[in-house]
Length: 134
Ligand SMILES: Cc1cc2nc3c(=O)[nH]c(=O)nc-3n(C[C@H](O)[C@H](O)[C@H](O)COP(=O)(O)O)c2cc1C
Image (cartoon, rainbow, N blue to C red; front, side):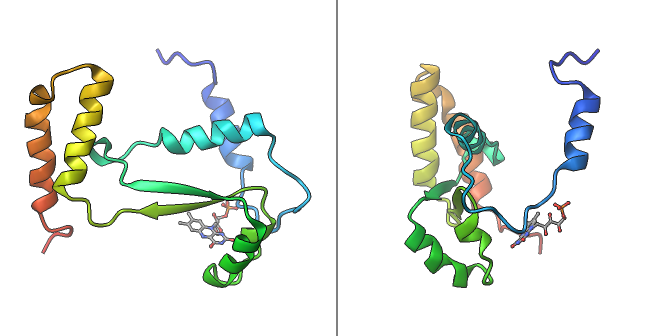
């Protein structure tokens, strides 16, 4: 049995009404307590091996947001939306990134780094493979 505080019907209902907003009311601002949850949902997003090779930039400065319009196919949502998040992906993940990740994992889990070496080797081996099948 699936146990959840949100019913399956509620999930479907929410997915049915959501839509991609094309025009924002620039005078409206997402309340802080809601924004914090949205921000955390980015921070908690899963990724392959858990490496999370990305950064999220929350751009607040209106002038910078205005400059970004021309890099966003002229879409004024970039300026008018309450918050603007730029997702930056690290494309050249390297062994040093894996080592940093393993060190952090050891710290959080309070585990000796050596115990995570097998996992580190698997991830590093994976990084050596070509990104796409031939
Ligand atoms: C990867 C991706 C990129 C998108 N890029 C834009 C965009 O640049 N501008 C925009 O107005 N909507 C963008 N959208 C929203 C789609 O246009 C929208 O999801 C689609 O038309 C379906 O409409 P709905 O989400 O309202 O149901 C993007 C959606 C995805 C998934």
